[in-house]
Length: 303
Length: 286
Image 1 (cartoon, each protein chain N blue to C red):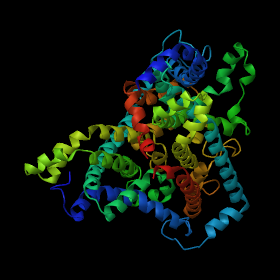
Image 2 (tube, rainbow over the protein chains, first blue to last red; image 1 turned 180 degrees about the horizontal axis):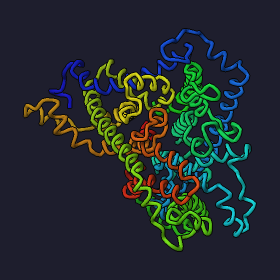
Image 3 (tube, one colour; image 1 turned 90 degrees about the horizontal axis):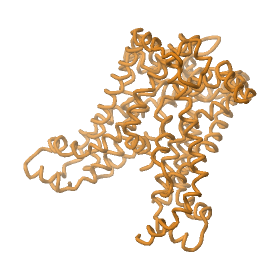
Image 4 (cartoon, helix red, strand yellow; image 1 turned 45 degrees about the vertical axis):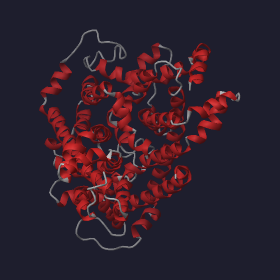
């Protein structure tokens, strides 16, 4: 489609105007401006004054605020690690099984694994909250001799966070499964065949051929998991509350950001946009610091 | 190739046994996926007390009153309608705007266009939630707070990067002969876009549509921060209200959850291949 289509860039810019408009006005600009907001005081709209790094200093020196921030930060990291270990390992395992062409009922399994991914986190979160309620499941569990399992797990500070994270893994495991499946399918069959001819075991094939070949996808999934986890909010909102109950033990960066910057928290009830923006800015920096090196490390082969 | 197939046939009996472990793992996981959904659906047909008697099996007496009362309560249908309006208008606009941009990027090759292209697809990685504080102020300033129109421009902005990415690639691959014929006939470029390009990129439009449908429909964050007015609430936001309101009556809560989950679930089961391909499109190609 080149001949006769050669017109000036100005002409094509015309087709780009709507996309640029929405993208710039509702994504690029608010994102950059949010970063700027972190250098301004922000209790009310209109009377904003430049305060330099004050918001960041408050966030890290005020005893209450810094405790909340670091706790949320650590919880988010734990949340991320659980996803990497459980969700993404299961994703690899499922993908290995689903790409074995001699395995039966692969389509059915694949469809089932992916069901939760299409549902709203809010709905699955509420559903698991009910399922895990001992008042309801207790009698049944006792009948099958598992009565000791009927405990208020979501009300226990030690178990709440891992459980919430596991529900989230249950929800999203379909994505890494499908991405790994595609990656395995892209490995040239001759390569596997050649390995087999030389007498390599399945485990050898997996470790020496398949894993190196899917490294770019591993990096991609790590990035996706990282970005999504630093924005996780819905699952805690549904299963616990915006305060990260019990006793802030499931408080993530996402819920903290909501309380501080959007909703306003006890006792004032007025959002502190400056402080909220500071949290967002740090998250942005953390994401860049995590994403860019991973991209460089895992995506270079493609170039 | 031929020898490969033979090899597989010979090994199939031996390998069938090897799959027992795989089947056990996947059946266990399938159970873990289906069980909560089963519990949700069957218990939504019980009444408030019989739900505790035998929570994991079919109701002795089917009770449809939960559904009747939820559907009678006008709010639920209104939430549903709001979500429908928001998602459909956002999707159509994303597809239209994305296709126009993809058409431009496919034809206009230059340093500026390349830079613009990279700038736009960078949005696939940017978490827009970080911009929420500013977006909230903008929505307030535009007077869109508490209206469904606050959501549409933001969803469009969220959907554009992937749309531009997928559609540009797709339009580039359209053979030149197909569009040249149009040029010969003296058709304008917009006419070619409308008559030739759009019909040809339908599969890509479907991919982009599904990719965006699920996050738009399932979004809780933006409705939560923009909308407090009952009449403008989206389905999920409404579900949070009903969940609180019916908390003492779980069969009703489960009926609300079932009604909210069913539309997407039916669509998914009817076309799971397209859904899976669509939802993993950005990631796999990127």
